[in-house]
Image 1 (cartoon, helix red, strand yellow):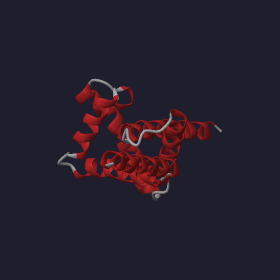
Image 2: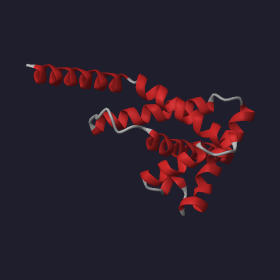
Image 3: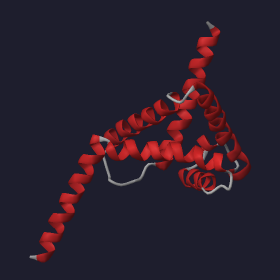
Length: 146
C-alpha cells in the first residue's frame, strides 16, 4: 500500500515539474483570458506528461531521472531549483540545456518543447484566438487603407 502512495506522490511531483517547464516555454501570444489560459496550460501539461508516461519503461525511468536532475542542477547555475526560479531565469536555464554540447541535455528539452508547441498550437482555444487576432489585424489593415 505504501508503494502505491509513493508512486502517486512521485507522479504528482514529476507532473508538477513538467507543468513548470511547460509554462515557462509557452508563448505570451496570442493573448487569452486567464480562465482559458489555465485550461490550455493544464491540457498542454497533461499531454506532455502523457507522452513521457507513454515512453517504454526503461526510457521513462531514465527520462524521469533526467527530469529531477534538470530540476536540481539549476541550483549550481541559477542558485535555486528550477521550479522555484522566476520565468526569465527558467528560460535562461532552458536555453543552457537546449544549447548544451551534451546531446542528452538537448534531447531532454527537445521532447518537452516539441510536445508543448504541438499541443499548444493545436489547442482549440489557441486556434480560435489566433483566428480572431488575424481577423482583427486584417480589419485594421483595411481601415488603414480607407
